[in-house]
Image 1 (cartoon, helix red, strand yellow):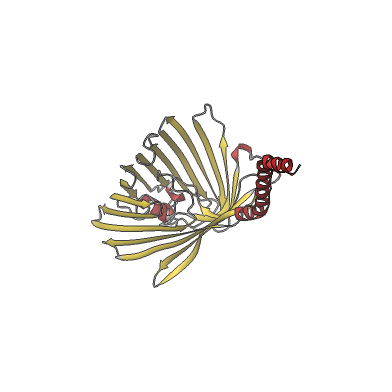
Image 2 (cartoon, rainbow, N blue to C red):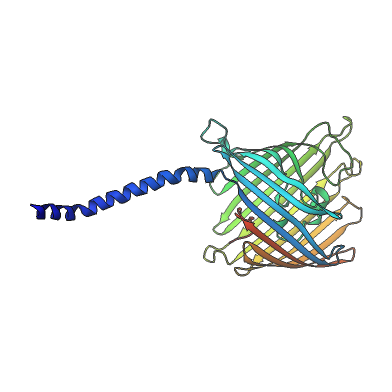
Length: 363
């Protein structure tokens, strides 16, 4: 009789063992579930550092920026972003908020956002062209192009406001049309001599993306910014822009090859308080990835009337080396027609929970 019970226990042991393992797994899942839910709402913290040495500049050595990027899910409907920069300012360092906003991915009470609508409320880099939305440490060159500096500022143009972005239906499946609308605090553009703090400004950007063929993408965009004149009978300040961008990335070579080329154009009025005076500028740049680590690139810029009436031409060549996406070395040379020559060496370092990389880095 005892032998029968022993044989029965031995035969059923795997069943009991499997049941016990399942119970342990379920218990572990119950214990870990609150921790997983809690981690979803813990902010991701990333620190960026950018150091530049330059021959031909006023400052031969400069820690240009330490930036903290903090972002997290607020709840199922919204994300929060805070970007705080520490930069040199004269003989001391200055701290300022580059961006800080809440991003509504869908409206409360709705499971889906109509037309892919997202709302951004707070302070943010204005979607005007492509380069104005890029932070210093993410640029494909050492500095912002001169037209961007003249019309939007050295570090881009960011203001408090409200942004709405959504997709417009298009024929076909290989393209998408995205519209961004903004109402924001006026003033802050570096070229504008006329100030109007009474009324808000408005801006818009329309971007059309095309998947031309396998491995080939193209996007063209148009931007506009309008700021009212404090005297109603005078023409408002206007800034218009156009941009284009092409990317080739072969599937078979994945992270090792790519080619990018882009251009932006700026036209404005209201400069120096002179109606009918339209300064303009443009730049074109290109970058090729020749292996997993090396990215040579070039840039040409033209500017007239925004700062001085004399036309300005500038040319730059750059070579970027990535050890990983967390450490980047870059050497460059810049020249302009005012006989300025600059030799530059940059190191960019990142630590923390790394956010999504910029669009031109193909890794």
